[in-house]
Length: 132
Image 1 (cartoon, rainbow, N blue to C red):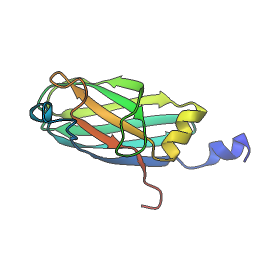
Image 2: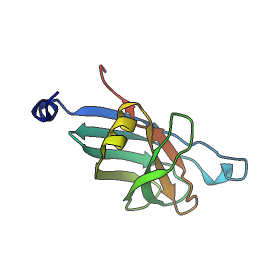
Image 3: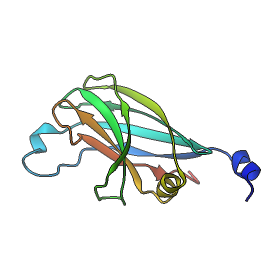
Image 4: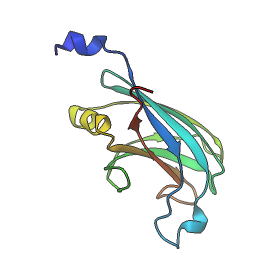
């Protein structure tokens, strides 16, 4: 595929429901809430948007990590969130070729970090929405 062909492709959609995932019984009281995350890939530009509610602490950051579904992995980027226990977020990232491959193989996820839980209250993998 030529570079021109790649640029002519339609944007690809990714996303899932945000949910809480306790790491241990110690942090279980510090987490809660729900939400949604959507991401649109246009070339190498990833635009992430979403909403959240019911958090136990004020949202501070949306961090993007790499790992297979159900596993924890390293942070590769972050987006500041305005705060509050409910709200919306949005941001744009330029992905390199390795990060593009991770995204396209459903190996990137987001974490909503809060003032009460810096490890994150909500998370979701950016799953391909192709064919939906």
